[in-house]
Amino acid sequence: MSILNTYMQKEQQLKQLQEELDRLKNDDRLKAELEFKDKLEALMREFDKSAADVIKLLDPQPAAAKATSTTSTGRAKRKLKIYKNPNTGEVVETRGGNQKTLKAWKDEHGAETVEGWLVRTED
Image (cartoon, rainbow, N blue to C red; front, side):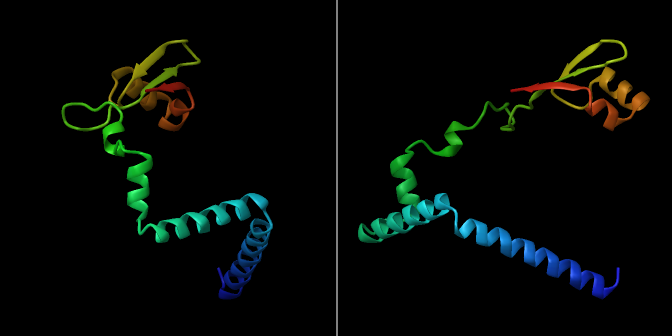
């Protein structure tokens, strides 16, 4: 790509971003959020509190304590994926990519095609 094409493309992207920014500046929701943020920061300064102090006050349980179920290795449990082969109607439920039938399907039909057979994902 020539440097002129690159320049024109970047100029067009800049114009689009500027238009988006202008739309956001006129959005009442943004104005309300900015007002809230300003008032909150003023209150934090008044009481000499940091963002971490406010978070601890509002949410005393640390985020780590709320983590999803983990295995003995401390790793989060993988989500259950359910695939259905449209050709045979066969269903495979797996939490990993090493499932024998799933691997055979991917070898035969291609990984991208088989990923399209994903019916749903569960925790």
